[in-house]
Image 1 (tube, rainbow, N blue to C red):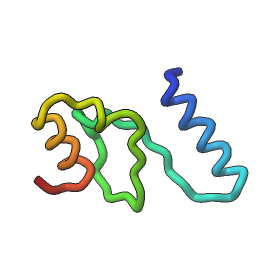
Image 2: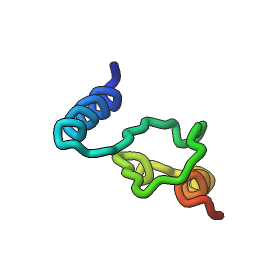
Image 3: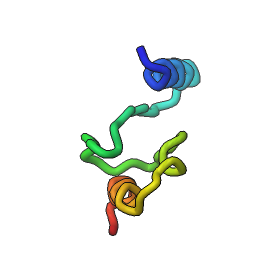
Length: 67
């Protein structure tokens, strides 16, 4: 289990304990399998490490669905 998987597992458990209906999803932003809209997205340690405009644009398109 990766650190991300462990964090998602822990967050999912806490949400269930509180009776919250939350879906936690881990995805590869450059090979995204996301096919739906979400009310909220949380990026931890991704956007600020890009060194090219192409990477930033692909990230923004995946997250926001625009160029």
